[in-house]
Length: 131
Image (cartoon, rainbow, N blue to C red; front, side, top):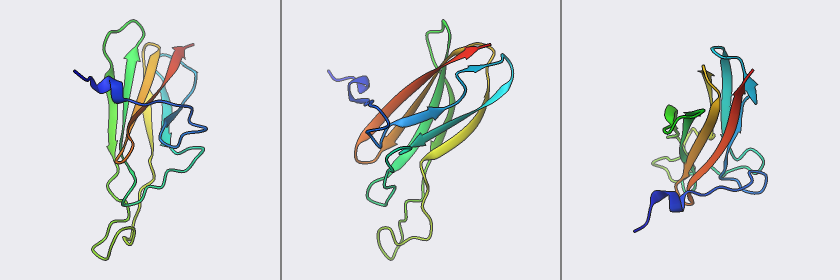
């Protein structure tokens, strides 16, 4: 029987436009706010058209030593240029980039997943230490 994890893809974001890139400090002070930016298509632009787009990005945190992740946020992108006139004729498009402020009391790993309506589910991660 197949498991969802068999279909989650990952790659080097410099050569693959679907990988969510996590930009945040490598180390933070416990209890202080820091900014996490997730972008799909950072080096190679993702089209984000009616036909081919990133539908959502989710961000999770795995505290050091924990066995389960905590969801930080889930962000949906709903404007892909669709219009009654036709595909890509609409007045607004969204770019697949989100920024969220986070405060942690322990180090751990940030995970980002992004869903492309054609190419499926993609993932990346980044370790964040405490100083």
